[in-house]
Structure formats: structure tokens, C-alpha cells
Image 1 (cartoon, rainbow over the protein chains, first blue to last red):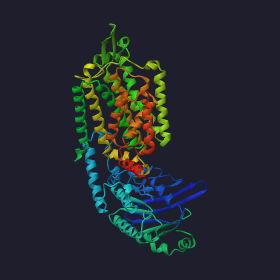
Image 2: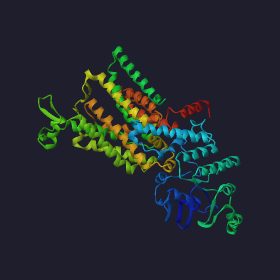
Image 3: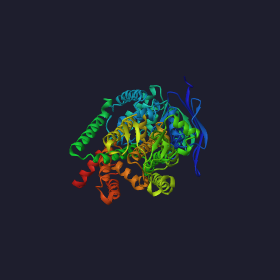
Image 4: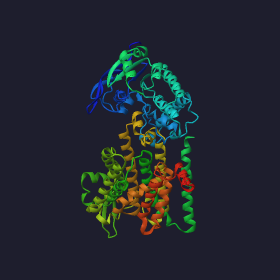
Length: 257
Length: 352
């Protein structure tokens, strides 16, 4: 299935006042691949991401998930269609336990409503026990099952990243959008993360990530898109992008972290 | 293992029986009156706890919903329909037994709606109003949401105070008893004091079971995730706007039900039930009870309302609740009865 495209970005465009943050960017994400979007600070990576996730609507262009148009949908609607994101600065509920945070990931898998929940109807109870079973498996897989009852606020940053990833996996996502997943991690943690992302891909899931950590991106990505000032300047395999003269110029010539 | 959350309910039932027996033995059965009224206020408070503590949305207008329930019941069960009984709707209701014929003290016969009808009408009305208010207002956050809901409360207060049909400053009296089932009647009659005490607390337990189930369900978790993590909830597929409105509507219906029961129990309702001071009181009880802690809210709601109704706080009644709120907001913004609060108290005494 070489040309099986799951997510397709068409001419996405966004301006903030006079700033053309994302300038008619297009690319495809093949099913079961890891695709990375890189670029210097202010290249428009996060803006692009937010448009895919529905955080804000693009000025122009479309986001297509398997022939379905996601453009203009709200974040929760994008999630309902199987596209789930993480956040650069982690968005976990610090009042809730690890288990509850990850169980939230099962939200779209269930349908039991308020009444069903209040009356503890069979449907609600069945969904709850299914969710707990699935979440326990994921927590075990990520080696955080023993601490599942701890409040998230007390965890190290690295562990919180794991919880956020667990929550995403609990949702059984078709596409994972990872917003700088290595930000704030030490080298050891970054290596573990890289291994994990590859494992997730090998389960047949599709990953689109925005990342600053070059070595991580080069190690794990199947394809890379390079943005600069909102414009796509290169796209291809890690080796082809690395040898692209324009990419070399912005990364060596510019003052980037 | 799943039933563990119901254990405290069994304990509560035991305590309630114990209290009743103590009042029986010590000849203080008159306490049951305030304990019954406290129960109805507790229903408002636990409903508000779900909105404030769990979903993280403030409502400073909860007394408005209590009043919507109470006044709807009062109006519908006191309006004399004798002249209108020939109209098709009312004659139909009459035939189905939903109109009550009653002889007054002066020997006149009056006809009024069954309390069951007015009860259902009150819940529907409160739900509809909560929905209509909630959709626009719950887009606001923090102080703005607080102010908007308080504005709603003030509007309700001024409406009942200024409208003839609501009895203006006098409120509505002569509200009939509410026979729920044969043998169980809500009303202030001396002879049914014990029944009323148990009935009121049965409704508290029912409310607790519904809310405890809710917060431990898929929808409840989604609600809890709104508290401080709306973006994450949104990203995980929670329709945050809809969830907030639904929680708001449920709390409003709980408050309205309490209002209906209280009005039948007291035989009337006055405008003070819809005052801002009352709304602040509910918020204070939720705060002191631990915000997202239904049991804490129940206990504090019982204790504080009982003391207040016994006149323990004297002329400073409302001031006490105001002070509680100020202290909680200053020192325990997440509510008392939380593990973190204990740490804070310890730190206060050990310096740093």
C-alpha cells in the first residue's frame, strides 16, 4: 500500500494581521508512516498543526482525512473522527489521577450519556469496564500502571508526557498529532520516546509530528516537510532533506535553537 | 468493588435513623423540622457542587432556580380553577384526577392543579430556563460567568418581588400538602413530621446516588476534565459547551425540585428564597464542603443550614455565610475538606 494516503493537506493558508503564518502549504501523510514537520522558530509549524486539529479555522485550503473534509470542524469534532493531538506544553488535568486522565482518552469510544451515567445503566457500566480494561493494558505497556492512582500534578515532566501519550493511545487514534513531543525531555527520555513512537507506528498508526529535536526527527521519520516563513521549502526522506541546499542554508545560516 | 461508593450512603442512612431516635428519646422532635428543611437545601448544594466543584463552572444564581421551582408549585397549586373547570383542558384534567377539589376554612370549594402536575411543570420550566440561560452564559469564564449568573438571580428576585401573581413581598401562602404516594405526604403538619424527615432525606440520598454515579461515569469524567483542562477535554473529543450546559441544567432541575418540596413543606414561599444572599449561601456551602466533594458538601450543608435555621447565627445569619466564603476563598480556594487544605493548615502553624 505505497500510495495509501490517510491525511491530506491542501493549500492550507493562515494570516494573522500582516503576518502570513502559513502560506498555501500542501502535503500528504501516508497511512502507517511517521511524518515530521520541521522548520525554524516562527516557521508556522504550530499554526499548521492547530489548523489540522481544529483549534482555529484556516483562511483557505482543506484538511482531508480519508476523503472526509475536516476543515472548519471544532477540535472535539476532529477528535471524533479519529485525529488526536498532544500539546507542546502538556494539557493534563492535574486534579485527576493518571488513570482518570487516560480514561478521558476513551471518551470518543463511548456513547453513554448523562442519564445513563446517573442511573448507572448497563450500557454505562459496560463501557466503563471496557474502558478500564483497555486503559490498564496501555498503562502497563507504558510502564506506568503501578502509579495509576497518583495525581498527575505530582509527576515528573517525562512521566507526564507518558500520561499524555497514554491518553492519546487510549483513544485508539487513526492519526496522532504530536506537538513537539521531545520538548522538556532529557536525552535518555528522548531516546525512549523515539523508540515508543516507532512502536506506535509499527502498530499501524499514522503519526504527524512537529519537532525541534533534529536528531529525533532524522532518526524516526519516514518523511519530512520543511517550513520556512510559512512556506514549504522541502519535502522528502530524511536523507534527501538533509542534503537539500536550501534547508542547509536556513539551518546553518539562521540563528535557530 | 463497584458498590464501594454506596457504603457512605448506608452509613448516612444509619446516622439519620439514629438522629431521629435521639430526638424521640430526648423529646426534641421539633429539631426534625429544621433537619427536613436542611435536607432540601442540601439537594441544591450537591447539585451546585457538581457544576462548581467537578465541572469548574460557577453559578451565583442557584437560588433563582430554587425559586422557579417553588413559585411554580405555589402558583399552580393555589390558583382557583373553579371558573375554568368547564374548559376542555381542565375538564380533561379533572376527569383524570389531576385536579384537586378542596374546601377552604370559610366553607368555599376551590379547585386547583395536582401537585404532581405542578412538580413536573416546575422541573421542566427550570430545565428550559437553565438551558436558555446556560447556552449563552456558559461561554463566559471566571468572574464574568459569576456576574452573569448573579444577574440572573437578581432578575428572578425582582420578578417575584414585583409581580402580583407571585404575591410580591408577601410571597405565596396556603400551598397545599403534596401527597406523593399513599402514606407519604410532604407538608408541615405536626402529625407527619417524622415521615417528612425521612422523605426529605430519601430525596437527598437519591440525589447523591445519581450524582455519585454520574461523576464516576464517562460523562462525569468528561465534566471533571473541564475543570482546568478545557483544551485537553476538547482535544479528546468532549463537546465542552454542551457538557457545561447539561451540567448546569441538571443542577437547576435539582434546585427546582428542592424548591417544590420545600414550598409544600412550608406551605408557602417568599421572595427571600431567591435572594442573592441565598445564592451566596449555596456557594459558601459548596466551598466549605470541599468543592468537588459531594460528601463534604452534604455534611456542611446539613450542619450550617441546621444551625442557621435554628437561629444559631442570630441577626448575623447571612454575614456568617459571607465570612465563610471570604475565608475559604482566601485560604482554601480549592475548597475545604481537601487533602491539600490540611497541608496548608499545617504550614500555617509551622511557619512556611
